[in-house]
Image (cartoon, rainbow over all chains, first blue to last red; front, side, top):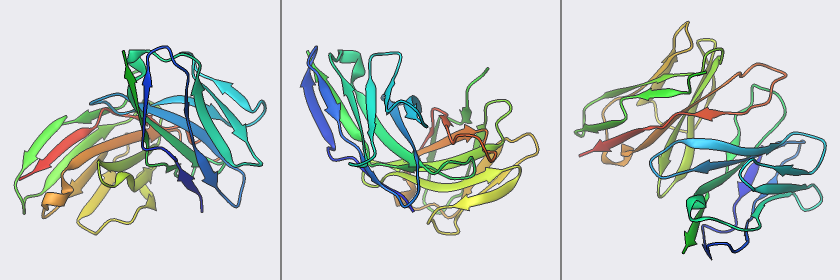
Length: 114
Length: 115
């Protein structure tokens, strides 16, 4: 079984500041890792994923996440946030193989202030 | 490709009633999962259907049920509604087959309010 811990329920930050949203997981097997974003009144959208290979993965809108196996972490970072990044962010893990349901964290609310 | 669609988007029901929610997955996706999202409990997995069979199930009472049709469209039903069933119900589709990644695509959700 897997579990995901998002250490911060809410992260307030000013526009153009850097941000890090933390995610730690536990699993007895290797996993795939995902970050999803949910804007108000919408469903979740995949932001980025780690399957294998380079431990640093990037999204098209400037977010990046680094897989750290020794620390079992997959923290999400952005060097300069915009007001439009205000949303709920979910970390998820899943064992390899299409028949497994991902385990989601409780979510982190990123609030960007002008 | 069209995304995941859910109908209706908003629903108001009374305690004791039942409700049916519908989800149409992305074309070619055979797996449909349902989640309940509330401020207090976060995102909770209800069940997953793959090729018309329930493949995974979360920890919800039997009042929550679902089914999947041959075209992969799915419905979930909640009987004898309780106030605590008020939530955003999200549907997610994926390829779901062995050997694929479990990347899910979510619909916009159905907001259910029970009064």
